[in-house]
Structures are given as structure tokens and as C-alpha cells.
Image 1 (cartoon, one colour):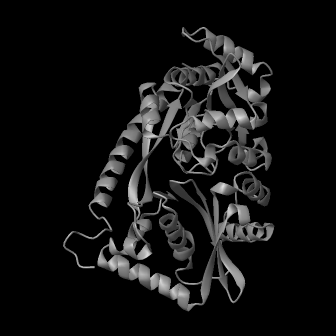
Image 2 (cartoon, helix red, strand yellow):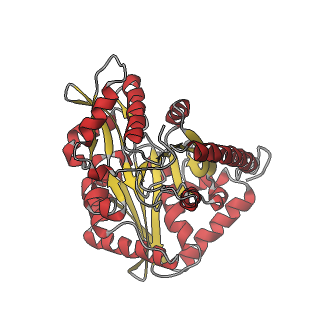
Image 3 (spheres, one colour):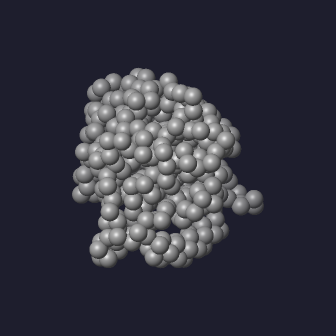
Length: 413
């Protein structure tokens, strides 16, 4: 365990970081002698090797792909310059990549969606350094998916062990793993990480025939409100184009970026992502992209971006250059919902927060994060805080689940 006075040496200042970590890890008894490498660029691994590991995971999604992560790094959106220094921890055996964890050395807490600003402030008030910290997440993307990426359970366990040794070797204040699936959250809890819960809202498709079939499943007031919202958009003369990634032009992406920037400006915030990133994912993973573009009088006025697989659609960003009532709901929810129904997609993950989504057929889902803090007193205080917070989340989930937007069995359509 690290001492209470941190003497952190950033990994960027350790020319022999890989070999030091390797020696520490290889002292741990194991039936497999893994070689450990800290990777600062996915190009050191290569797309075929990385994507082969991702495809072997039961909880993979497009955000873990080489195309998405490399676009974040190479565009500068998630880089050392932006405070997201890639330090991917990888395990190798006989030149084969056996396990990896997407990992960043961070000197701030922006773009994470699991908030620890109060923890950092407490450290500072006590004369301790909270930053830099280690973070395993998909930058700017609150989507559940594999974090402990491994070919088998032995390698997954060894990966957690290597992460703990990495934390201890460089006297890191804390490590945080955001949005792991249930099974990995449980594994991290068993390894001594403190677990934190949250809530998102997901829409589930049991096999709706069309949008009206979906509406018929909702209680009467919800159906009436959605029909009224859609009618207001139509009466404003607004039409929509759904553009798959393979057909998206540079002009489409430039307009989407304009909308994306407008949303951040409206909230007095700075956008995390640049046009280079969007163009890179448009070229590198077009099969997973859906742009919705709203038009009025022949001119584009709003747009949304979703990432999808054959089974799940992930709502990501939206924006508009003209204000119209209910345009947000149509562009970011109802058009993607129609796409899900038409293509047989089973789940639409609506992103972070947003209880208002329940009125549109989205239901609450528990999310996880896992946290390790080196300082014993702070670890104990935060564990007690999270115990109370997690109890509150459970009560919130119970309350939400008692107020389902779907109609009862006796309600008339």
C-alpha cells in the first residue's frame, strides 16, 4: 500500500516503465508467465491484433474498436495534450496479446460522466495530489462495455493483478474503471475495488411491427404526448434524412459538427471532439454509423449521431441551428427509434442521465464503476460515502420502476 504522502512519478518520466512493471508482475505466481507492456499508441499493437481481441469479447461494442479509439487518439481529442494520455496495460504470452485494459493517465476529470470532483477537492484540501490518476474508460462515452479485455479468465485475473502492481509501482493516487459490465464489476469488487452505481435509460424492442405498435404499448397519456410532439415537427415543415455512415458526405459531417458545437455553446461549454475525429470514424467504421439530418425548406437545420450494431443502438450527440419545439425529441429519439424497429435492433441506449426519457419508453438500468484509492483513510471515507449513495440509487431505481410508462393490461388503446 502506498504511503499517505504521495511521491507520484508520472509514467511519462519512466523510460523503462515496461521492464520495471514486468519484473514486479512476474514475481506473482502464475501458471502462465505473461509479459506486461504499457502501450501509449494502438499502432504499437496494430489493428488486426487489437480487433481480434475485441471480437473475442462477449461484451464488446464499436467503441472498443481500433477505428474508434485510434480516431480519438490521432485526432488529438484523447491525447496527452488534452489530458488523456493513453497508457494501455497489455499482457502478452508467446507474442500473442492475451489481455488488455484501455487505460489513461489523466490530470483532470472532464469527459467521464462519473463525477469525482469532490474527491479531488478533498485530496487538495488535505495537501495531497489526486492527479494524475489512472482511468479505464472510453473517452467522452458513457457506454457499458468490456474493460478487462482477456482471452480467458486466467488472463483477466492476471490483468487485474498487473493493474494493482502498476498502481503501487508508480504510487498512483487512484484508479477508476467506468461502465464495466455486471460480471466485470463483480470481479473488480472481489479484487478490492470500491463499486459505485448509477442509472441510465434504455429502450428495449420486443419485436414491434412499427412505431405505432410501439406507441400502443405505452399508457394513453404518453402515446398522446408523443403523437403531439411529432405532429408539431411535421406541421413546421421539417423532414428527415437517415444517412448511413457509408453514404455520409463531408458536407454531412461538417454540418453535424456545426450542430454538435452549437449544443456545447448553448451550455457554455467547450466541445470535446473535433471534425477530424468525426471524419476518421466516418471512414473507419461506417457500418456502425447513423446520421439523422433534419431539413426545412431544403436546408439542414438539425442533426443527430448514433453508433449501432445489429443488436444495439447508442444515441450519442445531437444539435440544431434553428430552434423548433420538439425538434430534439424527433431528431435524437423518434427517428432512431423508428430505425431500430425497421432494422430489428433490440436495444437503444439513450446515454447518460435523462429521466425524461422514461416518458418516451426508456426504462432505468443500473450502471457500474469501480474505484481503487491508495490512501487508506480516503479509501475508507469514500467507501462509506458510496455505501450511502448506492443505497440512494437503489431507492431511486425502485421508485422509477414503480412508474413504468407502459400501459397496464386493462388499459384501452
